[in-house]
Image 1 (tube, rainbow, N blue to C red):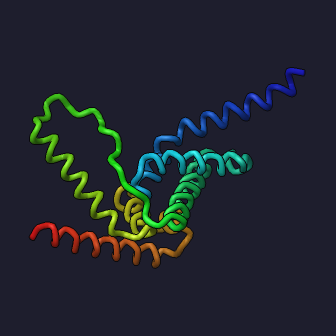
Image 2 (cartoon, one colour; image 1 turned 60 degrees about the vertical axis):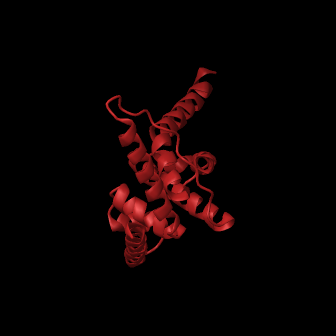
Image 3 (tube, helix red, strand yellow; image 1 turned 90 degrees about the vertical axis):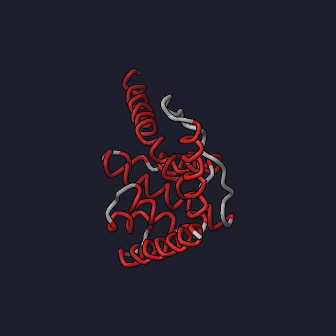
Length: 174
């Protein structure tokens, strides 16, 4: 009888470890694409449900993490396609250092709002490509895999995103 229970427990433990090891990273990845905490939480749950339905993909942990990132990116992009641009809200206030002055806190908040405004100008795919490449530091080849397109398309998305963002910055300086 214990032989029947053991494999089930091992599977549940592996699933729990997979979720706990990847939850924060996937939530942040999706948030950076959709820009809304509530939507990111829902989409993160959706991405994990999709991943856990395919147990055979979870055996190799490194491949599973890459596979999950691709599921997360596609889930977020599909959401934006279905719903147009998502609404944006402030990501919960992170604890600030005690040495920060009120002026420094205000500047940091303004910079964050400024950045979020600029990112809203980008298409979902441009935003995803830019975040995966410039923020996550992934090579263009990996970004292409995660977005399901060619490296040339990724470079085009990133170039377009940078041009739009540069124009936004120039406009804000005036």
